[in-house]
Image (cartoon, rainbow, N blue to C red):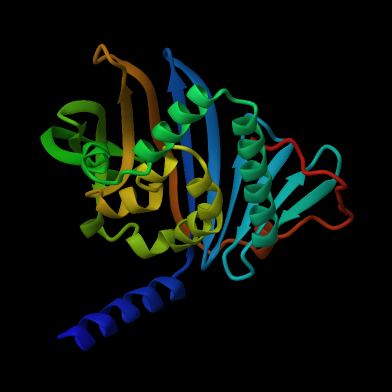
Length: 261
């Protein structure tokens, strides 16, 4: 049985890789006004994103080479980031934390170490952070695809109302987001270094648990009112030009990383 399951998983990944890539467009709205528009390109183990609100910069992730490239179109420069760079950042953060502890009083240091120990506890606190997807009445139709309503519930409280395009529709598969999983693995040393962050489920993990692709997501505030809405504006299965994942000709390597968010 195990062999059959492994073969089925391998066939699914192979079939997904053989298909064309994806172009995903999103529009974010806050306070009834458009706040951010972005486009993500996915092909094989590569991913790139462009933020329409900031045409000066773009982000490229190469999961095969395990490399991030930040492109500054205004300066016509680029900066690459490798696992060694991430390890260096982690080391610098560790050093800065130790230096901060050295300046603390014994009482402050004890309180700080106790806080860190509590945040490393992955028991009940982690369970409280898990999202439960509860079916809700109704649905919608977004860019030609039907979606079904769900409530996202965390610790007994609804944190978002989302309309999902079911995985069963075959528009997108979980395997399409393999580059995102590899990107989160790339950043894992930094995530583990950030207090409390290790308790949060990764986006890729949460997406794998979701009932489908989020077509409309309304984030709710403490008062239950909508604070932000994210909506799919494009979901296209197509071959993505290799140029989307490459630095434009004539660009030079920057001496310092671009000021990317």
